[in-house]
Image (cartoon, rainbow, N blue to C red; front, side, top):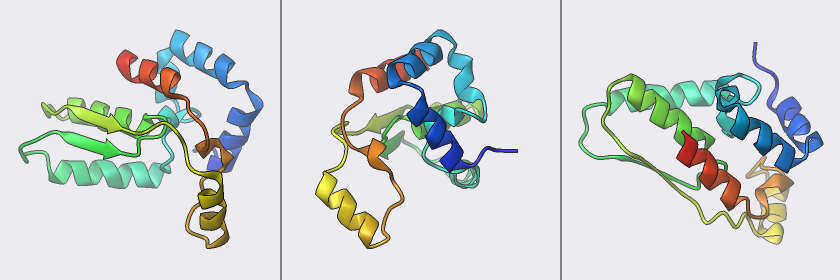
Length: 135
């Protein structure tokens, strides 16, 4: 059974980011656990829907591009899935890693357009770049 997303976020807020990254870099297999879940912002259902869609394009020529990759968790899931299916595709993860404008994020929250929390502000580019290179 998966842990609720809110519980995962709370745990990540409790553990200092530098400590969490140090543990994950030391033991990269932890990314494959349900607790970490590759740090994707998609639910398990969302990830299943994504991989179902990738199955539909298995024979389409070209690579895979994710725009707005955040912590690159979903990119890693797509790369692992493609590799498991024998797809010879490169997954490109593109993001500014600057986070969202605080006022814009507050407005989207007020309008019910996003559930993204305050962790979406600010840059974590060095850590995320290291995660991708280790995958």
